[in-house]
Image (cartoon, rainbow, N blue to C red; front, side, top):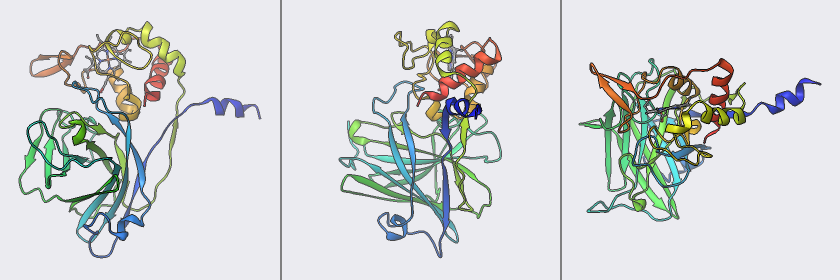
Amino acid sequence: MRWLPFALLLPLVSVAAEIPVKRVEGEPAADPHSPAWLAQPAVAVPLYPQASVPPATKASRASVKVRAQRGAATLALHLEWADRKPATERGIGAFADAAAVQWPQRPEAELPYIGMGHRGAPVSLWFWRADGTAELLAAEGFGTLTVQPDGGVQARGEWKNGVWRVVLSRAAAPSQESLSVAFAIWNGEGAERDGLKRLSAWQTLRPDGKVSLRSTATSGNVALGKRLMREKGCAVCHNYPGNPARPAIGPDLSYAGGLHAPAYLAESLREPSKVVVPCRGCFAEQDGRRVSFMPPFEGSDTEREDILAFLKSLR
Ligand code: HEC
């Protein structure tokens, strides 16, 4: 059994979260405390502080429990997360708790950037806020958020014993396809709003109710990757755990593995200007195109795999 120790050494980088969609008679319950929701097993989805574009959220990691149901005409999501104190009023210096469900507008195309999509890859958002707001938003990158009038999003949230439970729903055509979906929450007590939030990576909704746990082992070496971050100059521009310089020239990579799909991380190294994170001082505008200040990675394939293994471990 010589292969066994080797297999055990391969780091288990991520277990893809899939969310089964339960079919229900009629329509899913609007009441977030309905037993029709609470009896259904939930999937815990990790949430990470938004740190790619300043101002970054100071809050720590969290998680949201997600349940999904499809009725005759609507698709509904039930979100549940811990919050010691509800914040339901907005005013000067006061912010209300909120949650959003993010969808790619073109499910057949490449996945949009996790932070509100990117140029050419727009997202739709179902948005709920504890002051009673329920709306459909659209965005094509940070800072491009617009409200879609008559978006048809229904949402109801209730706070009880330190837990928010929210049901968001919208009319949806029956789909046999897997759907990508991501989540965000804002803690009003912590003055969170806009980009100050915690968000998840893209997850997969499985309309057939079947989920598979996929583990994506990687061939790269995390420790070597961490060393290469310094040797290849990444540490000059990016903050990440173990980089004492704490530079802020490029986005903070502290949660890069938790938030970004492996394919996106690989693309960031290969072709930095393909999807440009719109942080201030991160890019130049040339002929209407954004050109990243990050140089494309130069090194061997093994070095790139090691760096990717390190990035995926940041979560
Ligand atoms: C000269 C500064 C600089 C260097 C050196 C640099 N980067 Fe970047 N990096 C940036 C900037 C600026 C951005 C944001 C613009 C963009 O999307 O390309 C970025 C974006 C990224 C992203 C996407 C982050 C996100 O939140 O979406 C990753 C991942 C990344 N860099 C990894 C690396 C790695 C790994 C190295 C070393 C091989 C490296 N960078 C070297 C400046 C740099």
